Length: 332
Ligand SMILES: NC(=O)c1ccc[n+]([C@@H]2O[C@H](COP(=O)([O-])OP(=O)(O)OC[C@H]3O[C@@H](n4cnc5c(N)ncnc54)[C@H](O)[C@@H]3O)[C@@H](O)[C@H]2O)c1
Image 1 (cartoon, helix red, strand yellow):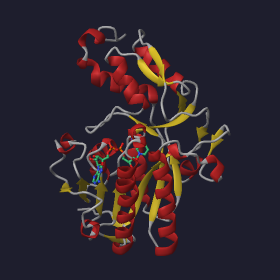
Image 2 (spheres, rainbow, N blue to C red):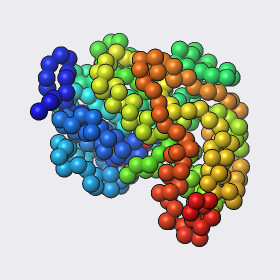
Image 3 (cartoon, rainbow, N blue to C red):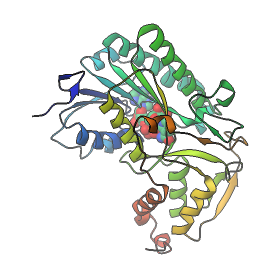
């Protein structure tokens, strides 16, 4: 039986995934075993978002174990014992509501990441950390990883915490030899068993199928922002696991830059009667910029995600949920 090649020797790879039942994790745990069939997978989640269905129908041939635990209080060194890499997806992730729960955000996101990173140092485990392109904010037309502090303007406590966590990992990398890579992920779209509908593309698909007007933030309609197909997010993580180089690099990961207007047009091509309502939101600025993923492409990663295809898939998934509306779908 073939084993994953690790540091030149044949060994069984153990991969820990925190927040494994969430939007990204629930797709990742279906996909990674196909690429790493001999690996062991330790799935950690505190079930705070009740996404039990993410554990349904996992392939029985794969070595999975589920740990119901909280990253803020459990012994992470015990969880990481014998592991090669941890993919750290556990977090409180709703940027809009983060204004009202800063303390919890700090505790779970910052303190949880700090505890995990320290456990990585103690156990020699490498870390894949998903930050967010929401740490950016610039007057320029485009921005990349080499930008100065003036181009980093997080607009919510959630995004502020992401930037602080990035800085924390840099310190631990420099001072304590933490092996890690940080991904700044674009806003995720696409289907998974633990799917959420609170970020732009998925939320708009839901509203469109339910016959509700799309609630678009007033300033956002013509602003360009980076988006990431869930398929590409999973492929990016697998790419990094395969490459197995954890040198503290930072990469933007995205499938496309797009405006909300362009996303609305794609949805309207499927549901022509679509209406849009402009609403106020706390996370608003007048900046429009594209994020470059050249650095990640330069080491061999090629995104293949597609907004049109994914929007169609999401709408098709929901098609049965509103029968009066599904008759309005062009190809329904
Ligand atoms: N979804 C996006 O658009 C996006 C974009 C950029 C970055 N990210 C980052 O990627 C990571 C995963 O995002 P997601 O969309 O899958 O989030 P999600 O909210 O869908 O999943 C997070 C998971 O973490 C679990 N969790 C929460 N607190 C926990 C705790 N204290 N201990 C253990 N488990 C806990 C939840 O139960 C949930 O299953 C997050 O760090 C997020 O900030 C996501």
